[in-house]
Image 1 (cartoon, rainbow over the protein chains, first blue to last red):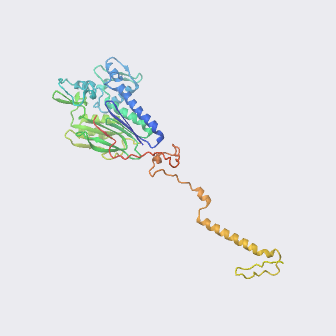
Image 2: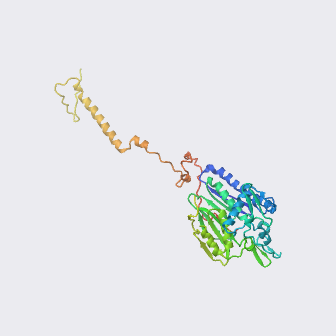
Image 3: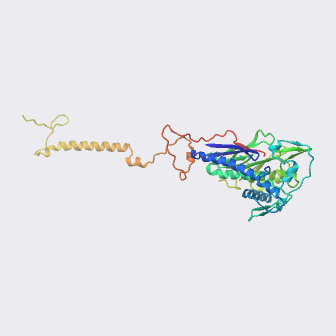
Length: 320
Length: 112
């Protein structure tokens, strides 16, 4: 039986699907999907920058005041974010929060509303590339020393981490698909059948432009077409290039990455969007990933063995 | 008046008794009838044995596991980890999990 549970968390729609042929697991699966909703809520309560009481907001407010002991969850995701910054040469950067807020993204998009126009004057941008290296982490004390001029945003990577965590936790109950706003992870097949996944058309969001049959792994999409607003005569969006301190201005409009896990896919999609098609393609190839890129003029670029029809696990990651 | 019974052949002719037969040897025809009947029984039993499997063979052949449906998803359950599914009695078949037929994407990856 295919069990479904849908709810809202992290300012997006979340879906959890579990396929099992064992009717005796019914109550356990239902309990598991309810736990998934609670877990998403817990992560949001701890890691959302839009919650003033979250552990992340408390850490951001304590920037410049010396080492702060943080929760295990915040520690885990922050370590992953710093690893991603190191691995991407600083293109992925969790310290861009002040740049985001300067650009106008200081509330959740649910609160702002789509395509907001503001008459506020433009403010100077601040480059943050490499700033992540100034964060001091003490493994023994589980403490973080955040410099006073920095603030963290763990939005995307926390979402990917949560998707992976929930999928792995539910996997013993059956085949699992977890989707949070387009960051999705698959573990197992439906009686041998892969999960059919659509890839949204970046220019006509009501329809899909590709169809993927996913046996394992994860997909994530980043696009400049979603959360965007006007500031003066400039169109801004939520993806910040740490090299400029302002909205990404590459030749790419949308990037969908297939990776072994949702956190890797989420980070890679952002990095490729920032880098543009040429350097972004090299980034994908070097890491054994695959991707579907759409340029700002509408051209599609397939990188690696991105599965338009069926995912064939490649050697870069294990498909158990 | 004393009546005697003379053994006769199938065509009604009196059966010739062996000469000098005693009272015991006079019963030879009964033994012949018994042996003939026994032989016919044995031959018939052998003929039936060739037509049917031996009782021992029938026991040795494992009974096939009844299949509830043609594509029962129970086949995915590992026999080492899960108990063998119990066979429900007629009329109380539980609803078997149906493998979904995906005619459209379950979900989509999208901009966030």
